[in-house]
Length: 445
Image (cartoon, rainbow, N blue to C red; front, side, top):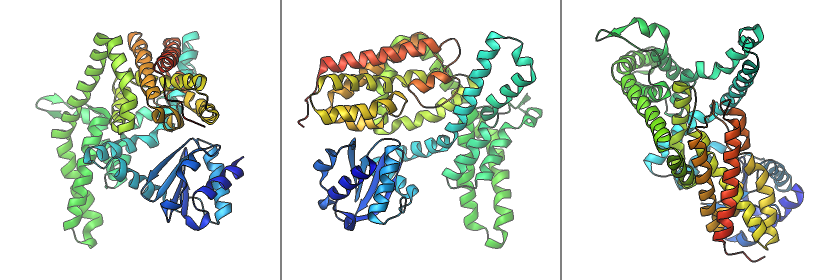
């Protein structure tokens, strides 16, 4: 029960007198405490319902899993009299970035990832509508010509139609510029009238470079806007700053940044296609097997714009179904641990984490099972490698972005859904077998 879990946690963190604030995210209860020495860490890890524990500065992060964390946080609020979320969640995230990803490169990747995270619900919604429309059109080719079919087509493609503008606004916000100026810069390099302008005797291509070009342009315009604002009197700031920003960044975008973005985007698309088509299963094995370590180091953030750009420029993503197998391998590894361990608490942790792991949320299994035990984490990587190899060999592609695991099947390109599900089963099986063979040191009760 949430109230019992909250009471046990409260006792083991030094009671309410030791708690400064309470906050939570998707899976973690975040308690900022006055004195870390009063926190009974080992006892806290053994508490019923607790899946893991992470310590950062003067904050104790207790992994409880989706759903449960909200209920326990509310119970903690009642027991302590503190409001949930009293500590700004944005401040918490910034502190985590400083603590875990303190290098400039990782901070840049995190910023880029933050540009696309708010778009995921739109990708999922439009992707599902697109998938439904494709299935109905497959059974009835005339369906797409009907009014209802046409409307579904418009809804399904909406996020891709406005993607550059959304990315422009989000990127400007993330890099310190004005969101609407960021959207305007994206519109400048995406507008259809750009095709009426010639450069060196050739017409310009609206939207060339996709989101990669948008990121380059908006990062530059945001930097320029901040620089200009320093030298413009406040009374003229509202007029002069946006005018100079749009004019200078607009010409820089068309002459330099968009062509550069186009070259990068083309190179990425061609490289992914060539790697998967020529390397096949070997490429998939490497990508699927190394994705979990990338997640642990934070470097996976740099792949988010690549996923979006592949969808924008090619209409499909061959990379995402391969990388999604890493989570499936972890599910298989966790099941092997369940059957092999004699630790009842570990069994309960696995049973709590498996449902959300199957649905694509892997944090409870990573921090509560495979990573602490060591070898099962390697087993999970092996499972992801075999699943990735199969998906690469069968050229499974997604038509949108969303959670990995079984939910991604709804966003897989029609005709390859069965292959994707087989890939998931292969990753489950390989992760299970590898972990069972590798073994692990079974923790004491």
